Image (cartoon, rainbow, N blue to C red):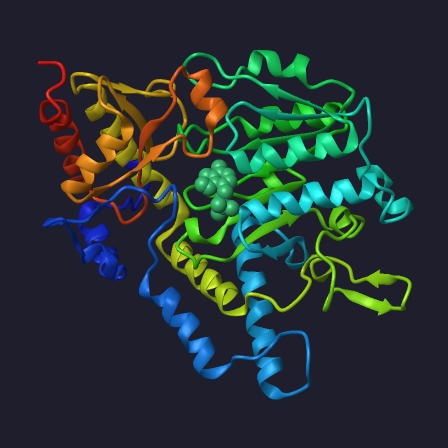
Length: 431
Ligand SMILES: Cc1ncc(COP(=O)(O)O)c(C=O)c1O
């Protein structure tokens, strides 16, 4: 994709962007920082935390409460941020609910469905109620955040949890999906992009299978929204979770996209102030979405910071970011595959993926790999990456994962490759 774009990103332009990320100028253990752990959390451009500071210095007040000017201005900033983020993913304003992170967004859906299953929410919520005989389908690729909440929901309701397995390379067994998704399937929850392998799932095919049996679709957009152009309406999913801190935004803020007609019919997850129309000592009536799901004082500066991050991403251009990461990813995968003793996990180069490379080095534990790379200033993630079932399916306990973002350069990839090439020698393995 990189070469076919009219105006692709390149190292010179990325060097200019890097000036917006002061932390990238740091040195670690005497070497320049090579940050290849954006899959865990991204670095932030200074405009993001300056926006938060500007908010606190000029507008700080609780939103949707009080008639004083600061409260009105803070509410405008809060709701303008919702519009910015909604536009970014192709949603309407009332279809974006603020949460702490993607984990909370996914729990919101499962707890709401659990409440519907317990009879809360009246007739409108009956369509979300699950019970014995109903099926929830996930995939073997899932991050624990899109697996455990569904396990818990199945346990609470008596529904059955099924999954679409991966093959030995980690590719989703789409050939089996049509049999696993049946007329009893009520929910299909799956990740857009694997956080371990970086591979992009065929959303259209999976959504078509779900629609065919009338199941709702829940997409984990944690690793796609930061890296690829994502439009929820063309993806045609019912829900999508995302995390702000992985897309240049602050920690503590994420979101749930949901079709308005679904969100408005779902029972609330958290209850309390700011989400009601009327309350008696016995019961309460709830506002429509999104406030129905935004109980209590909100994360106002974080929301503003996230909207600033989104504006930054839009200015650079999501197509260009995706193209650049495709280039970096290919360089990383090709380079790693050519190093003796390195096994790259996941399907080969032809698969659609973001700039993420998981690998193991024969004879060296990933934690040792991580520490050695750190001694060269290279920051990567090691462990099971909150995806134990996937690692098990790949026949490994843990792995090392290098993951890129728009601010990585060709030299970052080369620093990784040079350091990886020295690992086995350092540990005296394979001599
Ligand atoms: C695919 C995927 N889903 C969900 C999550 C959970 O995100 P958070 O910890 O921000 O809630 C992550 C984080 O790594 C992820 O990569």
